[in-house]
Image (cartoon, rainbow, N blue to C red; front, side, top):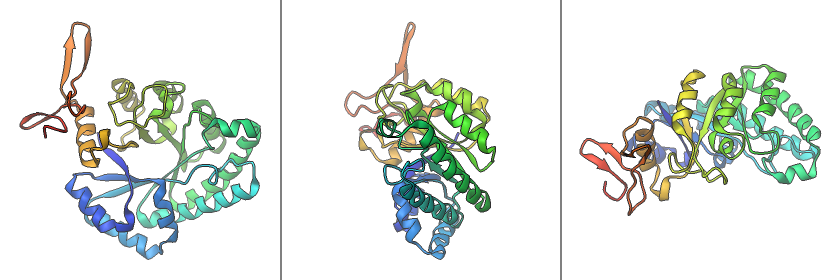
Length: 300
């Protein structure tokens, strides 16, 4: 199992590459804050970044598109929607220069704010209009759009499935967010509905109530069931970790812990029917198994 990590810094890509190589991180997914740099850069500059990543045997797998009130593809305000649509199109056209094949997009604001201010049938129609144009551009550019499940505003598994059926295009799929699913209809429920349409994942944990974006396994998601279901649907790409590192330990430590956790190289405890993961009482990090024995963050 491979992993990609949300990150930025492509404006200083040489330093970024040096860090990723030192941390043994092969794949990254660019966060939405990189969009301005991508839009403002010349294509030749983006191609140089892509060339240097390939030379270092690294890859930028995906990019998260802008989102929020001023970047809403289902906006009832037509002027704002068209502006957002233009930005998304320009981003899609530039992704091949970076070697990026997937763009993660929000279907709507993803909050109750929008639900109180626009009838659902209107924002749904606005989204379909936006996607009709974006899918066409994506098909021309060889890019796949990953529509993200959200706790509200057109983001339920059932609503996303209906959108997939409208377009029936290989260039439109789902970016399945485990954290969003965990605080709504459940992680496994959504995968059961959307399985064959999932082109990428946002993997993060939470307490089942708030969208904490915790690093696995520091929340309450049943990751064993998740991995089993991912295998069942035949997804073989890297899983994208969309979280900050636990206690701000940094990407290097997070990558080591995530990869150790999902490969079973961690310290567990059992007491009768009860079982769990051993964590350090000082730094609160899980213990991972290394060649020299168990290691937490403060006892590296």
